[in-house]
Image 1 (tube, rainbow, N blue to C red):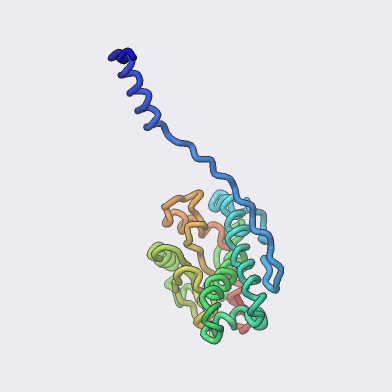
Image 2 (spheres, rainbow, N blue to C red; image 1 turned 90 degrees about the vertical axis):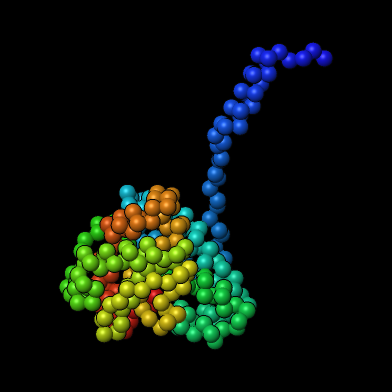
Length: 246
């Protein structure tokens, strides 16, 4: 067989290098949302369209976050409830406050999935288009306990930025209306400590990665544009009345 010419060898090498260096295009197919599992736990629809929070939170993130991530927590709870119906026989806040009374075999799964269900149920409720500012008793409490709105937002964003990996940053509220800033890892909920959450932000990457990638501080800053302060005010009044649940 005749030897390849020097020119042909160079062309072949160049072609191989180009093929190696050429960017590879990966096609990502959207997954179908999980089919609802029959059971006592339900996923409420979003109280606004998926694009209502744009440009701060994009429609695709909202769809994936609600229809897939939150739906999975609910489906998992219904699966657990088939063999352990007691997890649905008391309010969510009571079950989470008494996790240690559950069988050890299901305790972690209930903690993760019921915590996720409670956290996200709150999360969808306290957001909406329009923004605004805290008013009345709520504004006074923020001034009294958290140093005023501007300082509070700075502290809240810093706390959210310090959460290692996935978790939540939230404001807890006592029966007498006192506010405090707290964080939790993973899908842990303040309900596990018999506390009530006034409102909070999800700092799992699934809450922001499509738009903000690794720029969590940018997400935390932009998120204040979609806080529904009227709804937060309603939750504050409910907390003082002793009727706030999740």
